[in-house]
Length: 232
Image 1 (cartoon, rainbow, N blue to C red):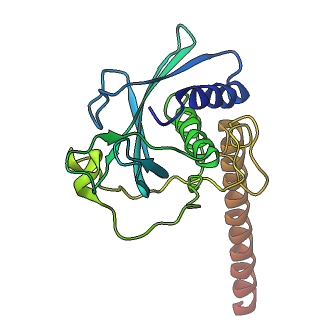
Image 2 (cartoon, rainbow, N blue to C red):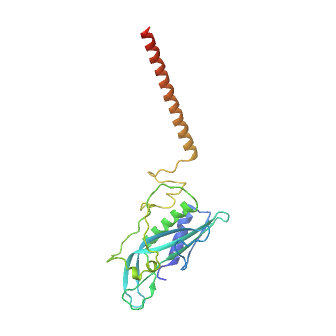
Image 3 (tube, rainbow, N blue to C red):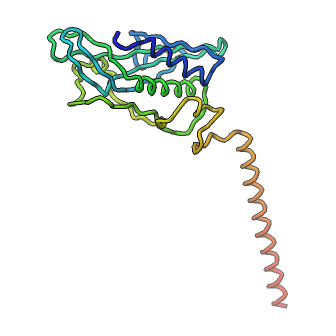
């Protein structure tokens, strides 16, 4: 495979140790993984990123900004152990008569950004940590891209998996898992209110409302007394 699975595994382990140092997580490639085909208890995350390809027959190079990376995630709370299965969809050379599907080559920066987004999804879906709606770390298109996406030579397109969904959960470029974990929220991003804070705010609002009603009643009584005295 052109993409270095060892780099992905090591980087994933480092990111997970930052947010869940006492839990064990493993990342393994799985060529049989399919979008929306999940075993019970598993959850899914997929992202499109940029990468470079090279044909093993003619050595031709091409770039693509629509490379689908698919993850299936499972967390066992009893064992404090999690699994992530990963599939990178391939592309083939459009110049060769019988091309092979080639695996992509990722920049280290885009590898890091995809995995940071994955860790965010693990915190959200597996640990049910709650965040505000923020954007994913955008991938860097630091390679020249010419023409439209070649769907006839894209493995994901040929299998019907390459339609891009709307992205609503994004992270700023400076995101790190520890910054956005439930234990430490970056300045300017408000955490979800705790139950204690919620109850406190509700009680304060209730007290203020009662005081307002009491003041209005007192004012009304005074006005009535004044009107009665003036009429006598």
